[in-house]
Length: 245
Image 1 (tube, rainbow, N blue to C red):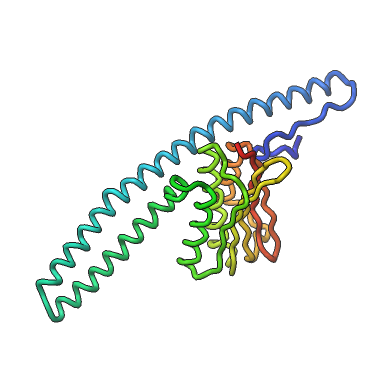
Image 2 (cartoon, rainbow, N blue to C red):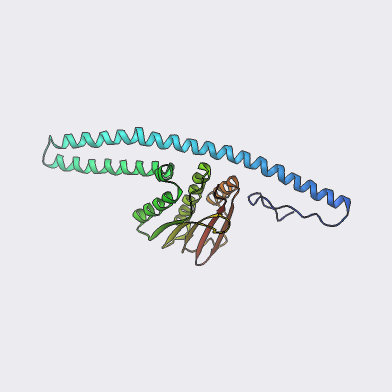
């Protein structure tokens, strides 16, 4: 009973022997696990759906309101720079570049909150886009690859993408890697999808799981998927296994 973990659902205690009290206790414990897992899945599902809805709202406001306001500022500075010369023109050029940089930051935050590639082109392209952005921002060799069909379920695509993002973020924050690989493959026999984030960093080294790993496990629970984290001194591999539907 002590080996049962709330974020590793599905494990039940085998019924041993013929002693009525032990059999009844085991069955009662397993029934309790059924109820707890169902309640936890329902609660986590509602919480994460609310979170995703809020992400979409914030991303939309950043893009439509803050982004448009910064674009208007850049255009206004361009107009003013044509009306002046000398030192003032130089200062306006610097201000314009700062505004453009802020505009790109806002767009990047909006993309991370709601990946455009995921909505428009599917999970495989979202993973490739994630790897490309990582390479551009950090200069680190990163690669996104897919040898699998995209999951048919929209929540499964969305939450799988979040697991990939969180895996990459955890690696960058804690592992000091020099390379990150994001992959999606399918088992030819069963069709089971495996999403993998692998880095060559320093590993977890016995550190207690933080909010990032907790979030990945909760999303795996919602997907009815299995999340495995293997870590040693040569790096960490996060693997999410789920059905394609």
